[in-house]
Amino acid sequence: MTFALIRSLLISIPASLSWTAVLVTFSILIQPFASRDQQARLFRYWGRCMLWICRVRVTVTGLHHLAAGQNYIFASNHLSLIDTPGLVAHLPRPLCFMAKKELFSVPFMGWYLHRQGHIPIERSDPKATVRSMAEAARVIHTERKSLLSFPEGTRSMDGEMLPFKEGTALLALRSGTPVVPIAVVGTDKIMPSKALEIRGGAVEIRLGHPIPVEGQDAKQRGELTERLRREIVALRG
Image (cartoon, rainbow, N blue to C red; front, side, top):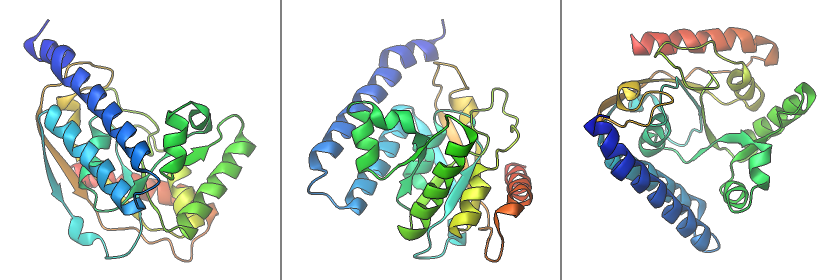
């Protein structure tokens, strides 16, 4: 058993879980009084706390590509559990996520997800999934939310990018929201997929140019998905 694993089991993981529970509880308690922007700042603070606990240093490039006042769908490769707090802490937009509809029925967690404006997705059958995606696109468009998405659908086990699913592109096309390709580099060295060992270290978040979707329809989701994957590969390179 390595020192890094011992430190993770005794310090980093318990501290991360405990502080997450504290901040979620605090977020729920202040919900009736806090604005959505204040809740978003608390979420960003959670991300920064997780990075500090795990001894992660982040460098971000490409933020100048983002236009003031524009909402986006941020699409990133997925290497580690560290990806989410890193992106939440450093993307300058209030973010929502798509989550399994079943999670919204879980006591405490479901109420939190609902109150924070995250989007439920029904995965029980293909038709229900399509309906859920259409509703998610409507919410993103009408409420002008920015969404963080991992098109691979799961974490890579070996650092190589998995095939992209088309859901991210479909949401962008149906909501008319530009997609920003993001490459996260180095989180697999901090905490490899399926591992408990948190090693600390340096991470890079590289934002590409937003991909416009005006004038395109859902039939072009395959083409947009492939373009998105190519651009993230290039950003990683």
